[in-house]
Image (cartoon, rainbow, N blue to C red; front, side):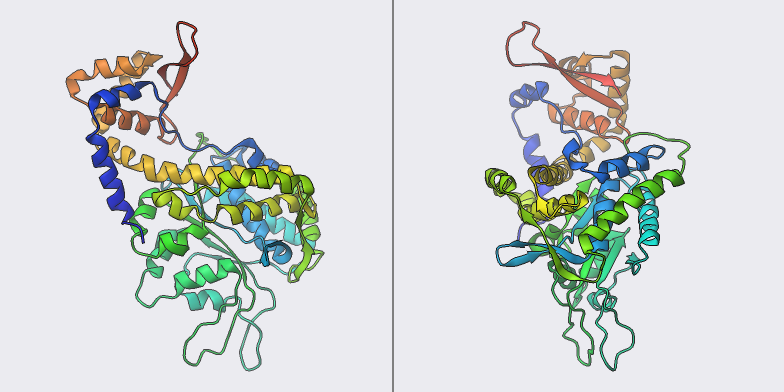
Length: 450
């Protein structure tokens, strides 16, 4: 078990302050750590159009919209499509954890359009409606009971094992999972694995065979770090989640609803994709095999060493499932193209998401301490912002010189600039200039009002 992540962050911050100031000053020409950006390859196929129409008149994050789409689509198509990885079967069953500031990242807003689209898809298909549960997973037994088998002597039960679980208050789920004797963490791990849920409880008369549960959680970065010490997060729970940092990219004072015509148009396309992935039966199991093309096999083998490279600390613990997720997402993107073969383009799309996941983990757990430090310096941050406003295009050295009287260290100034650049929306932007003498290498960093 790794050290408490909070302690690790505090120790890291303390060590940074002890860095020789001369070495710190050498960082004046380094780019700050901006929030992650999803590569355009990640918006593959219909995903690009869904993100476009959903953000046309709203503040929702396109990454959050895309994650909700992938999660809902994967839940809807169930276990019909599959691929072999060794002797194991991989089904499209992603878990997403969307991280952003409360009320500012528009995490919940990103659900609305996706929900409307898939409601329209179900109307067009006439299939069994996908079971959705929004929040309040209090126990492992309750989660499994929602998709329990039909058995003689029991009431209820279902042959449809699909369930989309939306946890808008994921911190509450983590708190429930941390309680003594709670089986919630273990059940969620079992659900991600797709294995039968059968509680070892006296007089228990039910089991949930082959569940297909997709989970989308929302949490703030401080809550995520604070709760990680309370659950078995680093050794099997949180590393089953694709952690995504999202932020409100722009301000829309008067958001408008997505047009019914756009909803209907993309719903018609998605309905065809669902039919292809399921062969018309959303409760079927293993009826459509998905394989890698020869070109995709070659490309995968080339990318595999970098994908599987070990990382230290928190990042290494949270990113141990990047390989399986890359294959899973590549399969989802293939299905979005109505293809039974995973091609190079599908792997590239999947790797864009894996890279965004990696960047999100780095951003949350390496930048957060600097942001916390800068937030304690709000007065100085306001002064720095005003200086940049009056001296547009100023260099880091010019800012440092102007604030010598404040006795701010280079580390503290970096924290302030990070805070201003990573606000929602960003208050400043940075640009790296070419060297004035025309020689190779990096020039100065200058700052502007966003």
